[in-house]
Amino acid sequence: DAKTTQPPSMDCAEGRAANLPCNHSTISGNEYVYWYRQIHSQGPQYIIHGLKNNETNEMASLIITEDRKSSTLILPHATLRDTAVYYCIVRVYSSASKIIFGSGTRLSIRP
Amino acid sequence: NAGVMQNPRHLVRRRGQEARLRCSPMKGHSHVYWYRQLPEEGLKFMVYLQKENIIDESGMPKERFSAEFPKEGPSILRIQQVVRGDSAAYFCASSPPGGAEVREKLFFGSGTQLSVL
Image (cartoon, rainbow over the protein chains, first blue to last red):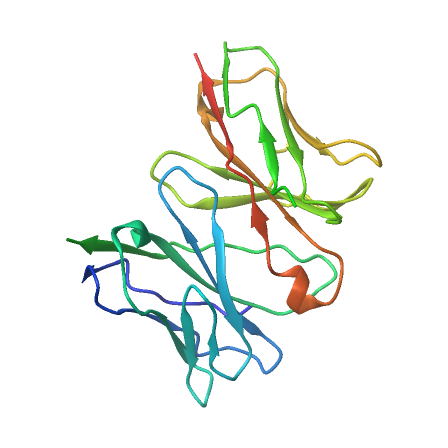
């Protein structure tokens, strides 16, 4: 699976858009980009995923560059409840499919 | 549709005792994953099971740890003769059957916090 690189920490003002980058320069053509987050003391939560087109759902938007070597997760109007560790994961299907979480980005939302 | 249910939420054991952690996946999900998270550390994969089969146990410690997912009932993570280093949050996740895109979308439970005295 492709390795991902994320900044260890970021902060954002409440109400502003939070843009979380992820580098995955070795991504293969059949690998999806997934984002999860983990709020303190809770289980991780799926946010969004995509292959090559930009995606949007009720939680966030995912922008994938044309060469697919990087992506950005956008939380359009960050709130204090968005304070969490955000994980970017790239995965290709295999018969023994486990998801490996890296260190992620610790996002702090300031009032 | 209830989410992934883990119990107990908190479990206290003395050194040498056994710990049994239970996980009921979401309805219709046939894949279960167990992860461990030590204090202030990241999530570490332990084991991946489908009904009655262990698919990948590459993250399981070689001794004292075992997991099962029987045909009926919840998945069980069993830790024998617990030691203080086993103190951690243990998370279970499930995913539905289907193609890769669907199966990679995991739904996590709230975890079991194991404390070994």
